[in-house]
Length: 522
Image 1 (spheres, helix red, strand yellow):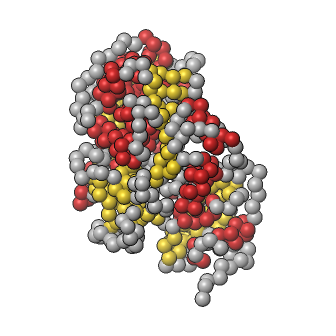
Image 2 (tube, rainbow, N blue to C red):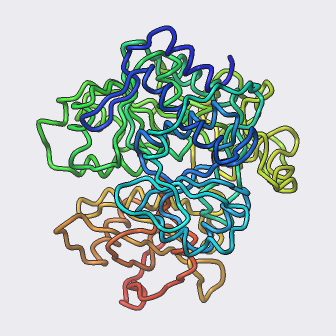
Image 3 (cartoon, rainbow, N blue to C red):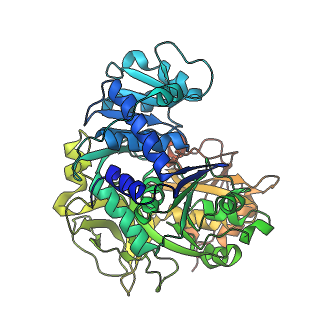
């Protein structure tokens, strides 16, 4: 196991003409990727970037992202992937906190950076990707790449920092997760060998953003580890997803939980099974849709669990012993426990915080960048405390319940927002939803659900309440219902529930004000 650059270069030497990347109607060989990445390294080096310097990438899913990412690995620089949907204070916080000296940014996002640049003294150079005239004091990325020399790789150690990935910040300010080369490559190997059993004939497809750990550790690097091909989709489209996978020849795909019901609610199509995909790696798959999804789309779901801090998947269902509704058992190199608030292990069946322990060095994050106190808190006792609520079943399989800070406390009962959302999302008129706790006049919280309807659908809030009443415990049935066109999300498709929670009741429909009471069972 060596460095990310070494992994790419070794495959390029072994099979230079093998296709590494398919994107839209274009493709690049391994030899092409090495050349482009060495050019990117030279661009950065000529701007004064040295090993350990931070280079921020605010790019969508394009080949240029990969050339810049691998270029930093070639140079020994540290990448700082930036969520392309960020703006304002959060964007400023990340760039300033990371101390990025160079930023590669999409042209259509440039205005966001220009508005902040006077407050970013460390940011010396802006490289703009796109066509047309750039702003003053910027450089054109494509022109710089075309004219660059081929940089020589800089010696790097596997334990050197490669990336700082800032968390989505759904429950507070973003934290910079530091990952080294070894952690990335170990995760990629574990995913390919153990979790999905990939072969050299597989093609790894993703529409998930390249600035997220999933696409990096579970698409890009496993493909290189196996010496095969990446099928990159610019962005997720429910109506075109299976056709895009088919056109790119993907046999492996990675999905987020929110994508499962959205794809299931698409009208039946010949494209449903026209693809070659045989495995979908996923997390938090709705149990009631799991088998139906496999049957409709002709593939197998491999359910797992992981976070940016664990370099992606560290727990997964064994391929030959899947249990629907669970995310499996620890992958080799990891241990899992369910902890009580005092950090003592809990027995099967009892809910507590999910904790992960690496059984060797350099398998998970090096810590949170410039945040030693937060690192110490998260890693106390040698276990990474995930902030997720879960339990073990009698066979030792782990079951996800909710984010600890997203569970709802109502009249002495703990309510899983995930469970409420699963019931709401099962309604044929609903596309997706988010359940949050809002203040109650009786103390603690009431359940509010924010609902996005399918295009053209209508739904009376009372009908939705009666639907939930048949599927949820009486105390979990929402009191408040609000319909809206979309949910606030991070670029990794995680709902920003803290924003919804901060809104409180707002203008939501109130079943109690409407005179409808949920009867408590006797």
